[in-house]
Length: 114
Length: 110
Image 1: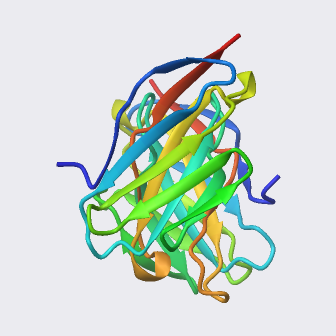
Image 2 (image 1 turned 180 degrees about the vertical axis):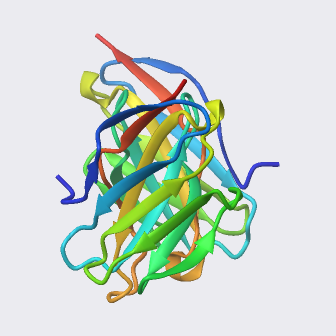
């Protein structure tokens, strides 16, 4: 196991609602990245948080936002949910301290938007 | 053109076979490369990191060709348990952004 945890495991929402997903990074890791993985696709980079600030963003609209806390845990918030937001949301933690960027994934949150 | 491209497969091979996957990347600034294994409805799990020309871990060998901008993964003596989707990924300096390919499906049959 990687030590990266995510909650909740599964979530069902309706179009237009808002959702918050949570991630706890592996001990010693100070960087958290969020990905969206649709069925049959590879993970798509949403953004990365380092030292509580967004540090790189993929091609996702502003209604995808996030936070990182002093303990390096992180939240992903999605407003005004759309049907296409249905996917597996993965967080991955990594460490800048040792200058590696190897990422270790949590089990993911499966979001269904009806 | 996608930043990281893989042959989606599926690759259907018998047990014991050797199988190779290729992955190309378009961003010449990419510095670090990875192979992940993903089982159905599970998270990706790191298989190998590739920082230089390549490395080997048991039955698995990864190679990097910066001039041609591709990474390969070779699996020798395939096992039934190797059946999974294999994702390659490339990240820029400092890992600010990691881009994944869509994955290659492998089925190993008895």
